[in-house]
Length: 92
Image 1 (cartoon, rainbow, N blue to C red):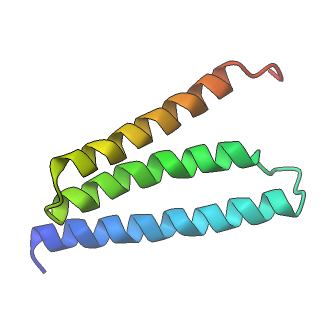
Image 2: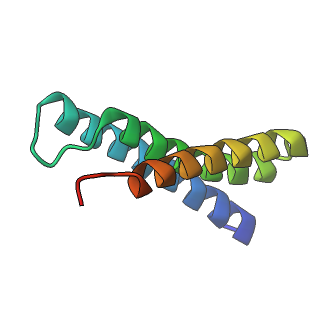
């Protein structure tokens, strides 16, 4: 397998791991686990990761740059929102 193929395979594997993480975190939240994260936090974490991985996959597939840029912007917004929520927590 050539190097671009390895990078693409790695990106797909990372996306699958991210989906497994989403399912695991969501089930913890739904079952009322004391270690569960708030649902919005779960979506923001997964959204930021999916945006970054999605931008890489789109770029490797040769999609127009605007779509990769949109995925990166989505990731940045999700990350920024998550960071602001964490910085404004009052339970420290």
